[in-house]
Amino acid sequence: MTSAARLPERLTLDEAAATLAALRTAVAGQGAAGDVTVNAGALRHFDSSAVAVLLELRRDLQPQGRALRVQDWPPRLQDLVRVYGVQELLRD
Image 1 (cartoon, rainbow, N blue to C red):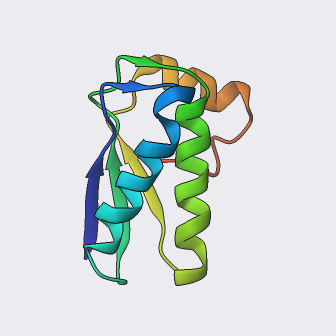
Image 2 (image 1 turned 120 degrees about the vertical axis):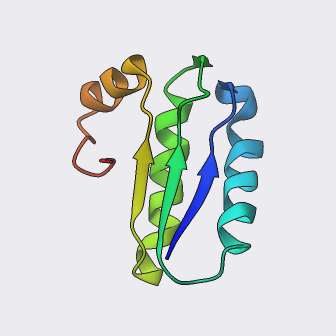
């Protein structure tokens, strides 16, 4: 089973903590089994905080043996992931 969550339209440093909390809540509501898919298609206004939020969510899932999948990447988010060298950690 795969849990699904969505990133908001805006994800900058100001929204990072609230977004991570919302993602954690969404994931917890899906139970403790299966991979988690995050849809990034709505992202329009974001900075490197979006990458940090995804990495933190991935860290949360690892001890549970769950994987994080990201779908509908905005091209600029893909660029940031490459710049930070974490594309292998955050793949769809």
